[in-house]
Structures are given as C-alpha cells and as structure tokens.
Length: 417
Image 1 (cartoon, rainbow, N blue to C red):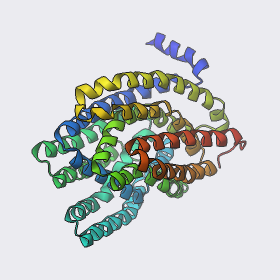
Image 2: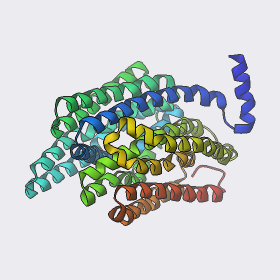
Image 3: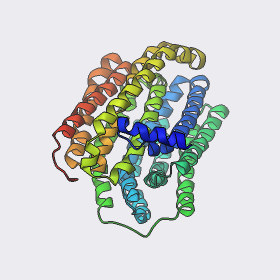
Image 4: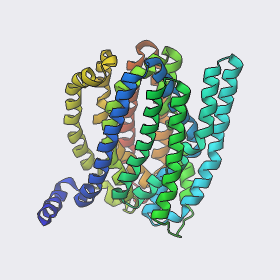
C-alpha cells in the first residue's frame, strides 16, 4: 500500500493532480459507473428485445418530457448544493428541497396543459400519459439532493451504493412492467412511481444516516437559482432531440436513436464522473491554483479517451449483433455517436467555471450553446433523421469546447466573479 502511495505521489508531478484523491474517489465512482452501466445495458437489452419499437419510442418521448418539465424544479441547485456542502454549509439542504418542490409546480401545470391540449385534439392516449407524468414531476429531480450532499462531502464510498440502489429499484419496476404487459401506461407509470419512491426514501435515509450541519450561507440559494435560470435553456435543448424526432419522424426513429446512442453516452457519462470528482475539490481552491494545471489535465483526459473511443467503434458491430439485433441497421449511428466519448474533457472546463462562479462564461454556455444545438437540430434532423440528432449533439459539444476555452484563456481576473 505504501508503495502504491509513493507511485501516486510521484505521478503527481506529471499529472498535476491529487492522484491519491483521484484514485480513492475515482475507484468508488468507477465501481458505481460499472454497476450502473451493467444495469443500463441490461435494461437496454430488455427494451430492444421485449418491447415494440413504437411503444419504446413512446416511452422515451415521455421520459424525455418529464425531464423537460422537471427543469422547473431548479436543477442548478444540485451544483450549488455540492459547492455549499464542500464548504461546510449543508444546513441549507431542507430549505433547498422546499424551494425546488414549490417551483416544480410550474412543470405540473405545464403537463396538465399538455394533457388538456391532447384531450381537446381527441388523443386520449397522449392526454392520459401527460396526466400520469404531471403527478410525478415534483418528485423526479427535487429529492435527488442526496447525491449532491454525498458528492459535496466527497463521500464516494457511500455515494456508490446509494446511487446504484436507486437505479436497481427503478430498473426492477420498469422491467417487471415490460415483461408483464406491453401497455405504455403501466410501463411509464412503473418508471415514474418507482423513481419518486426511491428518491424520497433515499433522501430521508441519507440525511438521517449522515446528519446535516447547522451551517448555512447567504449565497448558495441565489447562486442555485441563477444557475437554474442559466441552465434552463441548455437543459431544454438537451431534451429536444427526442422531442423533435418524435414530431418530425415518429416514435420508431426515437427508439432507433435512443438505442444507437445509449452506449456511447453511457461510456461518456463514465468519463464525465471525473468532473464529479473535480467540482468539490475545485470549490475550496483559489482560481490561480486551478488555472495552473487545468489545460494539462484536459490533455491527459483527452489522450485517455481516444483509445476508448476507437475500441467502441471496433466493438459496436459485434455488440449490436449479439445483444441488439433488432436495431442492427443502426450500428453506424452508434459508431458516429462514439465521438462524444472523446469530447468529455470539456466537463473539466465546465466545472472550473462553476466552481469559480464565472458568470459571464456560464451565461454564454447556457444561452449561446443551446441556441447552437437547437439550430442544428432543426437544420440536420429533417434531412438526416436520427443521424442528424447525433451530429447536432457532437457539433454542440465541439462549439462548447472552443467557447469555454476562449473564456478560460481570456480570463485574467485573479478572483471569483
């Protein structure tokens, strides 16, 4: 063990990173991601082999819709909570939860309006599904503050079983509904109900198991609201791919796009957990310290992601043939989507600007980049369908990198904004 610590300390002069923290926290996050990846892949296999593509397309449309409606619950509060907890102010969490629940009622209202619209159009299926969605909007994201709390504490060992157990509960309920019935109402209802119950239980369990402090501050809640406002357009744009595909090409295209892009996004998500490790560490360091090594870390991150991207491109045909044969014609789409894996280093820049409260860069990221993504969706999806959605996402990520790099290189202020 001492030898391993010596090697990690020696490597820090090349990586310019706290390798002990990275390996210790990274092990638990990697274990978490490996378990979640296995779970997601198993769920994807069930969807691909036991559910008609049209029904799966409907399901994905509404899971996207609930994510879109849950934007009202102030998703930026998660980042603000991580930052606050890392600085010792976890006493704010109950207040943040109440604020999120109140704001989520806007999403409930929007869902009922959509249900009324489809009822007026005579589409009872869509109307009923929006009513089911409306009932669970407040519980979809608001209670996930338990994740932010554990990340802010840097308690990745506890984060892993908590996160995995939430996904297991949801997967078991959803798979049971799929195997017992092909009915979209039961499948969507099982997903939403299990998500709500799991989130509520794990929130109260977490704050009971690891009690909150009495410390609060005056800047976290306004900052969280500001991040939520800034992130609203970006969050909406991130959900629009399936919405636009649904209305322009139909549910089957949504199913094909989701299946084809799922694995590359899961792998990219695994890499983005480095950003999860980075934020609480960045939050208690000066801007000058962060700036000295960030680009070097990004380069190492990029070089590590390249062979993973190539390996996925080579393995994709076999993976689809063995497990996702119903969607074999879309393997090329998955290979194109694998480019997203090599673009994950941009998460370090995002975490840098969030940790330093660089509002100009955050505003640019949250307003300009979603506009680029939305524009690409409407430019590329009509002629190219699902491929257009993948190319749009890649284009937006590339634009994000160059925009944030510009702000990083031109940021001469020695203090947080």
